[in-house]
Length: 426
Image (tube, rainbow, N blue to C red):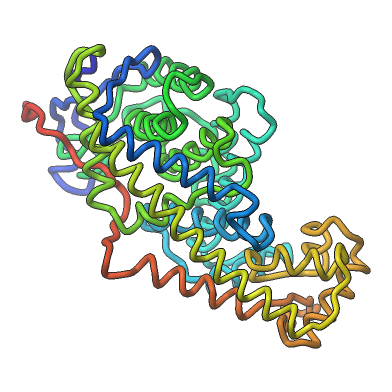
């Protein structure tokens, strides 16, 4: 059964204060494996989960989104990545992200490390989606690669793809776990728990939404990395949903909702930790709060995705009206379809996005410049040409405002609060 294990932290002398240098006894939590869990659900929760799964499937139906799938899919993936970063306290507005992208497009460095790290999370989310898109089993190496991609643009790239070999903790002092809010499993338990998690991700013991929710909660409970656990764990949600073919084209932007439901998110993950027998009814009941939150967040995310799809449809209709006749399947037609998720373009990036030559992409960009749908920015000493879509930037700005809406609440990492435990022996 899940349990707390008591460990001793020996005094160290690298802390700044007496409190940081002290030793203590602390309780680390070791969860039950997920495999072969006979989870029971009350009828109302089962109905909520079924409704949420239907909403995801509807979002992915051709008739649900009259705009191009690629444009809305890219927009939502970017929005999900930005929101997931925000949950961890990494915030940079659309303008800052564009400025950082411009620097990277030049092959240079950006001084805005937060923006660059958020862009790394977008790369990681793309990597996660690609991992599950070919139908192959997900491996531990795949999860490590997602994390490596995430950390590549961080201040600690060496952490990327490396499972922790030491005890870590959340909250309290940076030097010891004596006042930590939560202490995850000791390092010697992590490998076995991760292997069990991977087996669970590749199975179908539970419905797709339940599997995604429990995979995320277990990942956060294990806390396998020195940094980047929250963002990697939310990427895992979409690995599961894509692997189960419930969201083959468009991801529900769950993090958009969780970013403004911080208290519910925290309570759900906290409640997931229990001290009951692995096959007990109480274990299932401990997961119900989190599953209710996740199902509700998914329903809201799908509704929000539909709203943004309508706004994107209106935007692309306006572009086409301004441009006049557009040949179907042309470079311009293809570029308009993907532009709602791309506030910044170069000729080279446009060529890659639409799989057309740079000459064809350049002609399409010139049409968009003439219509003032794109504006040109000359960057760097070489006057490198970068093209910005102001209306797309405005769309992401509205998304940022939605994340800061007073109807929700936001909080930085960690989204976990402790369950009552025995007080440590000092």
